[in-house]
Length: 395
Image 1 (cartoon, rainbow, N blue to C red):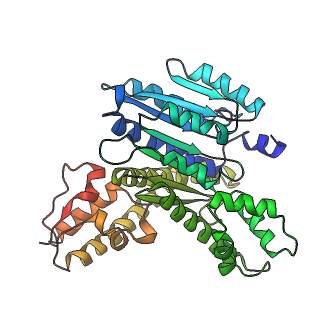
Image 2 (image 1 turned 180 degrees about the horizontal axis):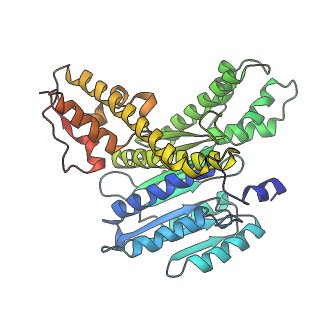
Image 3 (image 1 turned 30 degrees about the horizontal axis):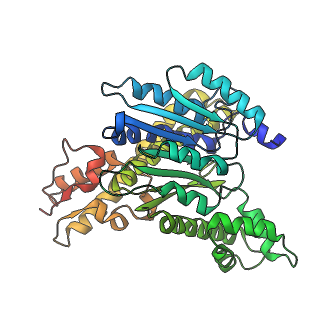
């Protein structure tokens, strides 16, 4: 491990706050739902680049978080037997991870493997072949090749089969590798490594279409990066037979460019809806974290009232989202046909609100449309995730 990677684990940065907030929100409903019908209520989490479990300042990394979740789920009235499988190939980091697991993992079934995830993933997938599995791949560099990711989905699919889902951190090093495309004598080894990650050399043309020269603008570079990420998600769907994928751009601050992207793949509508809920909650937590950090960095003493300010800003954001959702619902209702939001995602959520809003905002919008006498549908008593499948009927 390089000194840069070691420093990475000293304390949690804003970008890590977001990805961990999403996992924290998603782990419980995933295990609770899929474990309700699995063999012995077993569910598995595989953390392929596990890290030390905790940061040097004591903040939870993915390891400590998943162990805590496993304990919580085991204490449910209908317990879920969650097992955690951690893989990390740096000896010093593994030693720290073992210390965290010994301290936090009492009563939890877990394994820690000092190995390359490429070598050990097939072994773990065989061990959990009959139960639901969530695989988290969060490398410091490029992730494993696409064909190795695809084997995660080489499991039975369809009604009654164990759930299979994956969350991948993508684009670390992408710009550096893409820079080789402008070289007269590029490092073909690095380019072919990227080809393997992306499931083919298609990404080269995708990048150059948006960013044709090395002197391209920052906007062009961001467009090229996103084109490759979206293409990666499409290839992942093709390779895995996934129903759909989510892409979340992870930024250190709202006004800054993404430092990486999270790509989520699932075979079920429930997975898509639940992950969207978790993404919304994760973004809210991220905004709160940033508001507190900004206040602490303020030399003019605003730290005392940052939370009041943040809550006011959140209230304003939510009102704007609900107003937009209401307008879009009413526009769909004006067509005279009943519909489900899950079938009108582009029209109702659009690119601006997908992964940002969640059930509580949809409920408020449906109620607002109902108050305007545009629908007879009443969302009262409907579970958050079921709102997407609720039939919205014109008045």
